Length: 596
Ligand code: SF4
Ligand code: SF4
Ligand code: SF4
Ligand code: FES
Image 1 (cartoon, protein in one colour):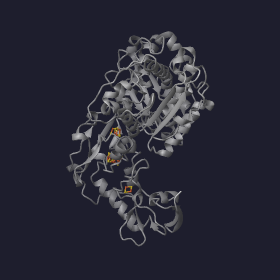
Image 2 (cartoon, helix red, strand yellow):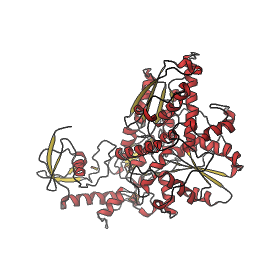
Image 3 (tube, protein in one colour):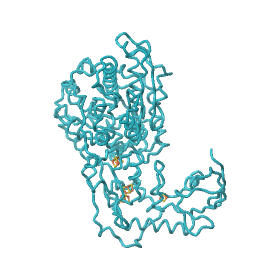
Image 4 (tube, protein in one colour):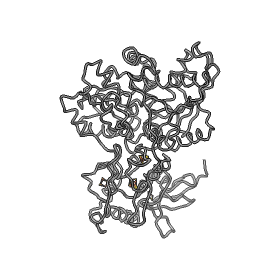
């Protein structure tokens, strides 16, 4: 803890740690200062100047986000000069802004609109420049729409892509009034290194970056009586959706969400957690097979460490940035795509439904899942495996459009066959969750005993550190796995692509000692995904994380191999983990891409 100092804000004395910004000090004192370029996840840019305050003895107004407090500082946040300055900045931004709010996807959730409303910007003192500008709207990506006419050049997206993701797909180009956010040679977002993670969407204050939404397509499918519309819900949606519908961050709304989906008219409501459990069976078996190949057979072609393949943002990242290391990826499809392939094969057969009539919808915390579902390799069922991907935010929009009073809904249960899951499936939604779920099952399958952690909580893999490490020593394994006796299984977990990069660079450098690595593209894992409610910041992600682990502890089964629907699918369809790939359709390979 640093040295404490005293300042005054609007005449009130505030005690804070030296070095705290005026913005943070004001927040602690309950004084709200408006911001646009500032975001808790990002470094301070100080470029919008909407947060200006007066400091006694200084002629110029100071940006609160970029000014550290000094002993005895006397700050005024609500003088005529401050209010006029902020109002002018908002007016200037609006003069070159296509402020067609009623036709804007961000209407009602836009920080610029909120400020314009608070400051009652009713007349236009500056020349309206919009008709003279040649704005571009990029709609080529299946995940993201980039509309330059809504951009205020705050550069949150640029910092997000560089600082959180290490991708640098976006940059600020040109100067002065021509300045704009661009990609490499102004190519479409779909043609550059962008991973579709959607973190820039979550951090954009306006409608300049939004998800491509498929709400109308899903409504059409639901109202088409010849179609059988199946929906799956990802683990992290249940701890985020409530935020869009009146609940505090960290509210668990699983039962209400299922009830809402049934009221929306889906024919079957099932759970991606089921295929998360299936992923553990497949991926765990693949890891053990690779370990045997490397340790016993001494096969030089076996690639270790093995990397998880659940996160489509991470997959596109490795395809662009480390194409020569693609063989390190597990061959398992993501739980979304396993579900999609199985719903039009296994489920269709079991329920005697023509797969041609099935429309497969997923609700995901993720915009990259839209791109993943559209990949040409994801047609193993003979059809497109997942037809439409909606984010948590899009589901909330549908619930509101349908006039459902979400708060009053009674809990409902998932439908059977692909709706049963365990706590291990739920924790896929948090960073470290796939690793924890895999270790719970793999350790037990190899030794016949529970993992040596109290109440199955593998604490070293939990938490928000960017790169986490864990080792687990295998002792006294069952006869079949005797080659693993005494082996220390070294694992790592990276979330946020900037952290994935650090781990991948260690593999390239030959200094990695890991056997198994979990990679998630988004900070905090899927619960911090680019399709989750906005805002998202460290505190909100922490509350969603607590909710995920609480959900796990409340489940009657907490290990994937105990899921009775998993036992059934192996008995009736898949036969065995890593079984006949011509039949099971749940494995895949990925493609090297260029680094534009
Ligand atoms: S970005 Fe915000 S201010 Fe601009 S049109 Fe959309 S809602 Fe309105
Ligand atoms: S796209 Fe959004 S985040 Fe990026 S500069 Fe424009 S307004 Fe800011
Ligand atoms: S979607 Fe992700 S990778 Fe693409 S520009 Fe946005 S932050 Fe960068
Ligand atoms: S929020 Fe402080 S300068 Fe933009």
